[in-house]
Image: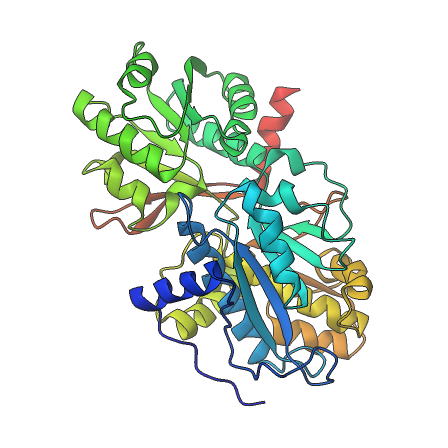
Length: 427
């Protein structure tokens, strides 16, 4: 099958894609005839994406679509899956639980064989829908309520927010910051960080000065900031939507509170993103974000090469290696099962990532082993993708900061072993 070129990512193109999605159309990463029917032996397989193309967390859609596109490139440029190429179909959930279920139902019209997403804000609105509709899902995000999930058709290649909270606390203590205030908005996603970060920080010898909960959409947060900084904390832990952050950070600049370290969640790690820009001129020195996974080695290098082919840069967006790994894992599970039917291949996902097996780092090398009848253990671009009994992974974290141009720089890492050491202290 002849593959079409990926369209250039322009502001107009992004806007048109958003309009298409919002109005019921769908964006495809490869060009295929609309008449192609899923039952055809050579018909493309649909990788569905549920992302927020509109709303206060719309930047997540770029993370999702960038990662999916690179995953499609990797599989399609190495023979596809059992004679099929992959194509994408996206729907907009606006990061709103009310919109998530209608978006999922719209996506079903494209007959996806696997779904990537949604992100944490809306996963619980649709998590019960995947198995009844025979669709496998790889959600994105670390929502703590999924730490012990039991959904046979749902997997998560991003480490839990409970682990991310531990990483944030560990990094702060490692830098000598032993007093902290928490500033988190009232969303379930943000509040999921609060108990584990308090527990970890205290276990490591830290002291919490204040725990502030923000109501999004207010015109000023001066009162909340004054409370948070009353005892002159050495570090601030935070998580909030971008609009709330813009107001909060502006108030913080006026009050002189942006000259202490702030450690945020992965949402704040986007290079030249809304959070870093809103933080102001001191972002390069004082803003750090915890990014799940500790990418390195052959798999990550190969991912970067693919990313450059698709997006013409190696400055990757956050979580893109997670979406990429999700698609590679799905394709390899189909190859092992010799079936593209999710009811069949979903039971072979763990055979891709979990030992025993020969370690492999790319779709092509893993597929070659599968075709020889060998057991494999895929080590992904995001790190070790071993799923536990709850279909969760346990990865390390990058602590990502910014340079003067607001491009990402790595300030440090927190390894799985270091996370485990904190858990041991908490007991």
